[in-house]
Image (cartoon, rainbow, N blue to C red):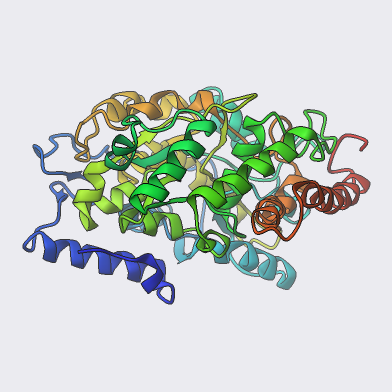
Length: 480
């Protein structure tokens, strides 16, 4: 059976995935390619069932007495097994400490607007999670410095990319608490690349263009790198900039977007679109590249492992054919943004700040379980908390064939960085990310609406205005 993601554009992502699971079951005679053997998240593929159990939940008494209500808002995780674990996990904690906890899940695209609405109204959730830096909300959130420092006291040094994605050095404020992150490898269909003559997939941006275009022209399967106003397109665009030696800001937070390196990156994206993609990438949502890969319609995407995990159940043939690659080498560098950077914020209007902070420490204490139940999607900000992570990616307990398919993630920290690279993820970079200025810049040139030079100049004008505003407020460094 062939699945076309364009047939499902009116459906919510979970409805689409539910359809794929049902279709996968039907195609397999009622049995999905991944079986649950030990509770949520303990899945195994067509090979032997895993004998590794989920980590035990740990509990430590809060440092202060707690009571009242705690209202939590977070995204609907792209690996649904995580939410199946998280909701009872937080409820159990609430029962232990005497807090009435409410958890609301919404789609990731809805969260920034919901945050803005609640901040404007001065009421809403006590604790909110998003999957990209929320630095633009710094004036309206509680400083999380005490929670971060306590976590580091308990578990060692925080991973640098998480620290730089939650801390503003200009104000010495942690505008968010960051307990974890997610790598952003290349996901490629091995059979397509093997037919094209590159069985191990691309290792450089040049190979991506050459062989991706060849796959599209000879095999009719397009590539999936978005240029839309959504999170994955933002991440992919930054990876391309850095690989060409370009960036939005320098390490001192000066705007440097208008450069020959940026223009070359924009020219490259235009060529990639013309050779290997279709107009669909201009209107993608965050789940679109997932859906396209699951449906067997894409040769390569820049994403986490969530689409692969879903395809293990929904389309086992695609799962077996999906492999992973590290960041692509460009003319100047080899670097990608983290696919997800968990930012938990407590708005100033929160009614139960103590409970929110204590829950975050409890959640972090149990990050090994979070990693497990996300099926190795979530990586820790404190390495000591998930000591088995290296073993898990080397020998996937969730049914990968071969079992070391995820081994490329073992050194992902070495080719991952924050969205403000080479500087911090300051409020200006947060606003630029939220307004999708970078993917719009690429899209305008790829569609032929502007020359690469004009697209870059127009993006620079918007970015300079944003930096000037935040710099005037003392929240961004640099002088230009």
